[in-house]
Amino acid sequence: MPLYDALYDGGVEHLLCRHEQAAALGAVGYARASGQVGVCMATSGPGATNLITGLADAMLDSIPVVAITGQVPMAAIGTDAFQEVDVLGMSLSCTKHSYLVERAEDLGAIIAEAFEVASSGRPGPVLIDVPKNVQVALVEPKPLGTSSVEPEPLDEVGIAAARALLAAAEKPILYVGGGVGMASAEAELRAFAAASQIPSVTTLKGIGTLEPDDELFLGMLGMHGTKAANLAVQQCDLLLVVGARFDDRVTGKLDAFAVNAKVIHLDKDAAEFGKVRHAQVGIASELKAVLPALTLGELQIDDWRQRCLALKAQHPWRYDHPGDNIFAPLMLKQLSEALDDGAMVSCDVGQHQMWVAQHMRFTSPRNHLSSSGLGTMGFGLPAAIGAKLARPGDESVLVSGDGSFMMNVQELGTLKRAQLPVKMVLLDNQRLGMVRQWQELFFDGRYSETILTDNPDFVALAAAFNIPGETITRKAEVAPAIQRMLAADTAYLLHVRISAEDNVWPLVPPGVANDQMMEDQA
Amino acid sequence: MNQHNLQIETQFRPEVLERVLRLTRHRGFRVDDMEMSTSVDCQKLNIRVTVSSERPIQLLSRQLEKLMDVTRVEAQLLEQRLKKTA
Image (cartoon, each protein chain N blue to C red):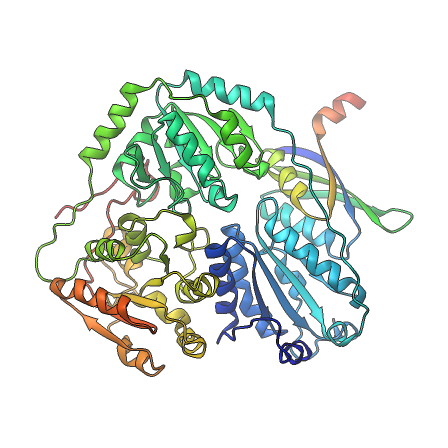
C-alpha cells in the first residue's frame, strides 16, 4: 500500500490488471512488442504467487521482465504473518535472478541492477521482493554508477571452424530461433541469409525474423511445421543454428533428428551448446557481431537449393475446404492480408496458435507474440494489452481460442478501464481443440473433459464490458467482419464459430522422426 | 554414471546454497556429498559438492556459471582425481 500511495502522486504510468498473472503476462507482451524491459507489480502472498506463471513464461522464452512484489516487514518474515509467503524461494526456478531487499539503502542499486540483469546477456525475468519496512523507509537517493561492458572479442578459432564447415557443406540449413530477435540481430541475419543464399527454417519464436517472402525460406519446422522445412532439415548435412535450442517440439524424436547433419551453434548462452544436441562448433557471442564474421558470400549449393525449392513447391498450404463453415487457416490468411506489416498479433495456446504460426505473415518477431516455451493458455489477452501499451500506434490483434480466452477473461475489465482498442478474434470450436485432436488421433476418440458446449455467450460477455462484437459462422461473412473489426475505434470481439472436427496439419506424432508427418486425409 | 567434484565460489547471499542445490537437482544430478565454508570477511562462500549423473557435467557447470552470485565453477572427474592421488 505505501508503494501505491506513492504512485498516487503520478510520474509512473500504471495499468491496473484484474489478476496478477495477467499483469506478468502483460509485462511479457510489452517487452516482446517493444524490445524493452516490461515491469509488473503485485502485493505479497497471493499477489506474488499469482505472478509465478507469468514469470515462468518469461523464463522459458527469455523475455526481459522486472517483477516487484510487496513483502511483510523484515521482522515478520518467517513468522507465518498475514499474506506472507517465501517469494524469494518460489522465484528460484522461474527467474533469471531475484532479490529480497533487506536494507532500504540498497533498494536503488538493486532496482538498477535488476533492469541490467533482465535485459543483458540472455534476457529473462528478475524479481525484487520489497518488505514493507523498506517501502516506508526514508533514504537519501544516491547517484547510481554507470556501467559499461566492453564487447567481448570474437572467438576467431570458432569462427574459422564454422566457416570451414559452411564452405564444405553440400546441404546446409539455417535454423533460426527467438534469440535473434532478442538480440535485435534480424538485419544481420537477413544479410547473412541473402549473401549466402542458404535455405532457412524458423522455430515458433523465430517467426518474423527471416524475410517471409524469400523463396529459400521454407517456414516453421517441428511438430506443426511445414513439410518442406521438416524434410529439408532431415536431409541436410549441416545445421547452422542461430539463437535456438533444439526444443523437443522442434526436433521430434531426437536421435532421428537431422541425423547426417553437423551442427554450428550460435547463441549468447553457452549453456545451450551440447545441452540437447552435440555441436561441432559452438560460438557464444553477440549474434550481431558473429553473423557478419561468418558470411562467406554465396554458397556453392545449387543442387541443394533446387531440391529445397522443389520441396516447397510440392507442399504448399491448401485452403480448399468443403462447405460453408469457416475454415480457420483461410480466415487467418485473410486477416493477415487485411493487416499492415506493423500490426502485432498475440495468440493463446492450442490449435489457433499453430494456425497463426502457419498461415499469418510476419515481418518482425516483435509482431508475433506467442507463448512458445511454457505454452501458457491465457497468455494472449494480457499480451495483446501489453503490446498495445508498448506501441499505441500499431494495431494489436488477439487471436484466441474458446478454451484459452476463458483463462484470463477478467482482463476484459482492464481493456475497458484503459479504453485500449485491442481487436479480438475468438476462434470457437467449443472444444479444448488441440487436446481434442490428440484424443481423436491417439486416444481412440475418448473426449475426456474437452467438450465446451457450455461456453458462455462471448459477445454478451464482451458487451458486459462495453466492448462491441459480433458472431460469424459462414465463409462469406469473414471478409466484411474483419473490415468492421479493424474499422472500430474501440476494442472489438469477433466471435468466429468453427467446426470442432478441423485439425492442425501436418502433425509429427509423438516419438517419431520429423519426416513421418501425418497429414489431412480429407 | 559419472561422479564429479564441483568447486563453486560464490558471493555470500543467504539463498545462494538453495540456488545451487535446486539447479543441481533440476538438471538431473544427485548430490552425494558436500561441504561449505565462508570466507573470513563473510563475503564469499566456497562450496564443494560431489555429484553423480548419467549426464555430462558441462550441462550442470555451465548452468551454475550463469547464476548471478556464482563467480567460479570448476569440475573434476572424481575417478581421475583418485587415480592421480593413488
